[in-house]
Image (cartoon, rainbow, N blue to C red; front, side):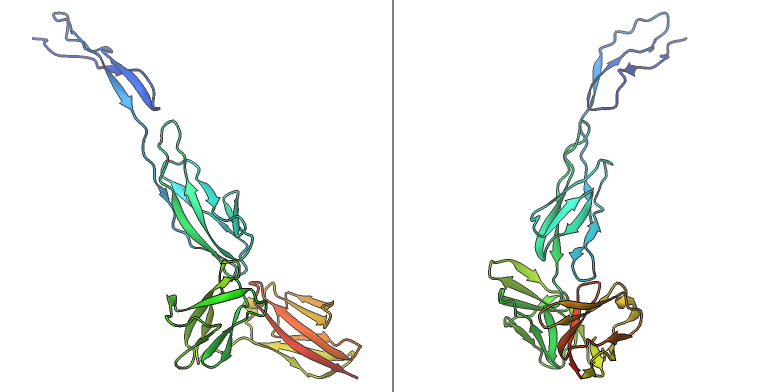
Length: 290
């Protein structure tokens, strides 16, 4: 009988947050009927957004001085970052930049815009660990080097777990050292410093440097011998100092485990220092005799 609707409603164009009128558009009931249309509104409200961020923020032990931060908001909007302690780490152009040893937190946030609510902030810890503070002293003892007299208390961890009762300047194992160890030490000003880890096992040879021959004659050739792997020698440097701290010789990026060097012409005691890219260093005294 022709009693049917044709056409469709329409609304004011727009995809942003707001109120849009819904109109009759070209909706028709045919020539025999008049539509009494009661208008309404289409309301777009702000959407929620979520930040996804799963990143380990660790600096200091493997030569890292910066980390690219990779938090993502599901809205597609840019994420902002702030550091709780800019003395430890700062943020620039979405990169975390090392400043000093210690700990802080990094907050990822997104304030929203006309279409999205602010995202709940995500906070991650950042640890800037300090190398060269702990070393194997005996088969069952790790020693913390407080020669700077900057530290007042210590906590020790084995395989990531706090070891109760180990609060001295050294860690004493019940048997041979076997595991991954580190310490968290408190400085005199209250700052907490985490050391780089030390992985030890009866089957793992500890890294070393040796000087051959030692003593050595003035102006003669001597060798620095190390068991550090060639991969870890990349970007390393070897330096020779006198006892007043003057740098006499530098060798950069050694590629071999045996490094030829020349002894100074003046008799005395000298210091040979090899520093890896991650900051770990080794020193040996060199005796020069005529």
